[in-house]
Amino acid sequence: MKLYNTLTHKVEEITPLNPPAVTVYTCGPTVYDYAHIGHWFNYVRMDTLIRALKLNALEPKWVMNITDVGHLVSDADEGEDKLEKGAKREGKTAWEVADFYTQDFLDGMRQLHILKPDHIVKATKHIPDQIALIQRLEEKGFTYIIDDGVYYDTSMFEGYEAFARLDLEALQAGARVAFNKQKRNPSDFALWKFSPKDKKRDMEWDSPWGKGFPGWHIECSAMSMKYLGDTLDIHTGGIDHIAVHHTNEIAQSEAATGKRFANTWMHSNHVLVDGEKISKSLGNGIRLQEILAMGISIDAIRLHILESHYRSQSKFSMEGLRISESTLRKLQHNFSWIYQYAINTYSTKHLLEGDLKKFKKTISEALSNDLNTPKALSQLHAAITMVTASEASQHDIPIMEDFAEFIRETLGISILHKFELSHENKKLIAEREQARTNKEWAKSDELRDHLAKQGIGVRDTAHGTIWFRL
RNA sequence: GGCGCCUUGGCGGAGUGGUUACGCAGAGGUCUGCAAAACCUCGUACACCGGUUCAAUUCCGGUAGGCGCCUCCA
Image 1 (cartoon, rainbow, N blue to C red):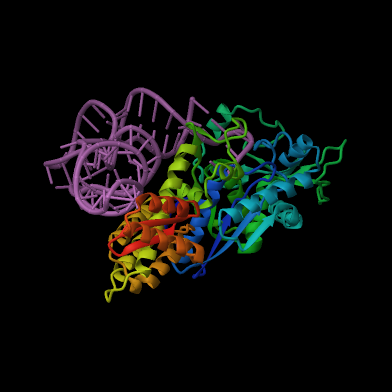
Image 2 (tube, rainbow, N blue to C red):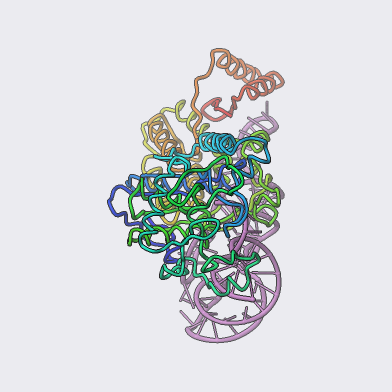
């Protein structure tokens, strides 16, 4: 199993510390608003990673966080907490806002058939862990206190800029925001923020340094290490987190433990809409429910996401999504059709076993090579073209079922729709065949349309009429 | 201003130092009562300019354009 590692800028073999276990930590959402399609690209890709690891006989231990406190509207630690801001906007408490959007996110995860992480951890449920980690940093002398909080002194951590290949002086010179003058270094960040003296926040906790709330970055370090140990096999997240969030996670974690924080860093690139990034300020993020309301299926959304590589800047459009929908339908129709054809066909030959085994292998190889999902899909297309062109028979039924299950497990897409025909429909099909025999074309066409409305397709073949699920 | 990434046929999108990506759309054909589907064939893509090489879309340098991060943000 190979993956591009942001740490080394190379595609590398994954070598877990304790195989077959492989620990994976994914930066989850900040739950102050609805998740949009860009988020779902990210999480479907992470889901694909987990599926690919399993395919390689590894046993992923997957932890994802929910940021339900502390993510400020600015990484420079200025401004408001997003949750508190969302609460103000909606006339709710920060807790209510967090609950609402957490639920929205978890619903989306389920709907998109994203595998369930072993632990979904909330920042607000791990305040003591974060405080303990800050204390460790304090003991080692990495922290200092100013008016608004406890800060991490990035100049104390050698190689702070290495991960993101930052040029700190240049960053400072070109930065568009004014840095807090009390900070020792512009790149220093808050570990603990104090509550404003004059008002009570919805979310605040006591700490050795005073009442307040944790900075955004500390949660990921505290929770990942709590559930997965000091060194992670794989840490994933959006590409935008490299420069600040992940750089800070490394600084905090490695300063505290003296050990490597994560061996492999995987980053999902952004999705562009009309050539631009999806962002709140542009208002160009479409929600999952909006897409579903347009009649696009879950499988089509997944297929569409898999059609581009996770490291490329993918383009998103509703038109592209509709194309994926028709592509998916075609795959499903063809596979379901040939399956039904095989059920109705007798032969002593076993045609498909070797070929489908070969395709399973090429699909596995594509996924195992830095999650090359476009290539995996091309192999899926090739497999289905091969199968539909074959003279499949009853012997091939288990092989086809096995292949469909393999695709469902690895890509999370259903290509085989199995269901029993009702007596009613069986009768209609028989009637249509009779009408065809009698050359009553108008009647047979009418019956065909009638069946189509119920989701039953018919194809007239040399082996008679074969029905399949549309 | 600094750093990083990208530029593939009508669209989407892989990949490779010399051999078909693939999908969608399009053209022609086979089959069919007609459909539909399937199958077969087809387009001589790799931003531009140099360099390395027997050979470059693929490596190196430069030019142009785009995008991202350094605010919000997966």
